[in-house]
Length: 180
Image 1 (cartoon, rainbow, N blue to C red):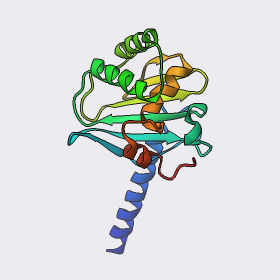
Image 2 (image 1 turned 90 degrees about the vertical axis):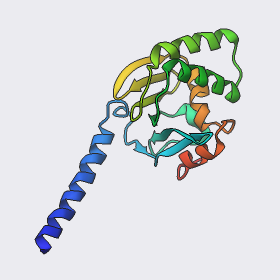
Image 3 (image 1 turned 90 degrees about the horizontal axis):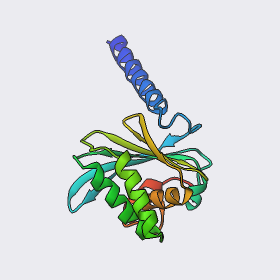
Image 4 (image 1 turned 180 degrees about the vertical axis):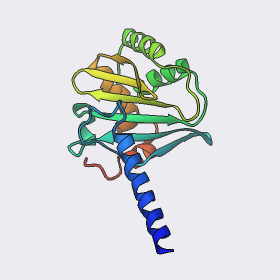
């Protein structure tokens, strides 16, 4: 009997190790040396579950200076959404974080509409911050595009990481345990 229990425990431990390895070997986070994911934080809007957010950050990450650090923000969707709606909402939320011109809004909105596909439950969109360069976007482990503009990157990730976010409770939970 003890052999069965031991085999089960070792099997579970091995499964956890393989799961952790599989997550850290995802192509979208592979370039982030020693990045570890935060626990998922669920966004609910008017009672509807929208997505689970996770931040992949290295130990040196400081959330008060997020734009200066490489990191990834993963959104695993819980419902169907149109890519155009995600793009439009993103630009609207970026306006809460900081100001930008109508021309920038148009350019960034066009870029996001061309990058974001329609998404379904269980699918992931991951943005990777490239300090001083911009953002790389990945969908389910496939690179789908980039916006090469550090101002865009700061404002886009500010949707979740800035103190001016529209979801302060989600921000607090997402940054829990990270160094300010």
